[in-house]
Length: 344
Ligand code: HEC
Image 1 (tube, rainbow, N blue to C red):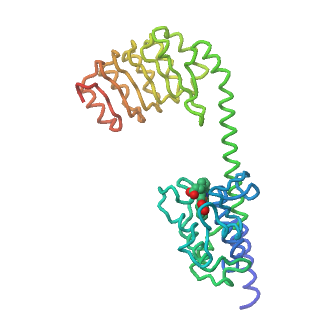
Image 2 (tube, rainbow, N blue to C red):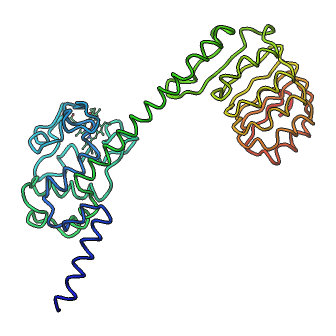
Image 3 (cartoon, helix red, strand yellow):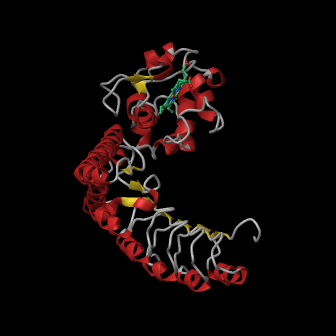
């Protein structure tokens, strides 16, 4: 082969690696140092978050669960509460492998269910590493790794890449937390205002989001159509609204069309009629609608066709007929319609 053809090939390989941004490709898998460049990236990605001190922990916080550190060969051999994590030369006696291989729903399974799991090619490498008595300071080839282990190692990202990926994930979580705190903070003033008119009626659905719930149940008949206007500043955040047994009529219900995130709505025991349902037919997120004890008829039910997320509809003691429900169900198969105990 002449030099003129060889150089472009080498160049193409180098450029390819740079373009892929994959430092793992920079070195053939067989040349990677066994412990630092193959084992550590696996354990850092899947175990360090719960089994390392602050310096190595992706969260930046010390977490040494089961008193087991997995950040050095010495600590792996030392083990945790129950046993050593790995017995050099004996895979079957090695607790870390035993835990990884347990069924996912077993409480002792590692990593715990729901966390990023060890992939089959990673397990193959870990098992070989333990059976070879935890080699370090040598390349995979010089440690005697078989071809299938070397092939598996080719899929393991470099330690630098793992660090980068983990840092990105951590900053994403941080950003999400900050965003949520901001969204909740932004709602504080308007929520205080609403609370002045309706004490204890508004709140967050959960700690994990900025969705709002409103209930007028304790005000009962004192809650009237004109009060809906007071909710305008929080319209965009409301997901649950309970107006059951209030004095609300079709005029007040019209205001609900401005609550695009509404998922659950109680209008049971109110004066609402078919006309009021015009405001509801556009609420695409609606999952639950309670019209129990209202004047709604078959014509009103027809208006609800098209609410593609509707799963529960209560029509007990309304003027809706079983025949109309049957017709409704033809296009609303996922919606569970409750016409009361006598029918169904
Ligand atoms: C999300 C947290 C979390 C992750 C990730 C995690 N573990 Fe654990 N691990 C725990 C907890 C909690 C315990 C202690 C309770 C128990 O023994 O199950 C534990 C205990 C262990 C033990 C028993 C230690 C002893 O001697 O008692 C081993 C071995 C172990 N983990 C291995 C691993 C390995 C290997 C990984 C990565 C493949 C891993 N863990 C990832 C949370 C985690």
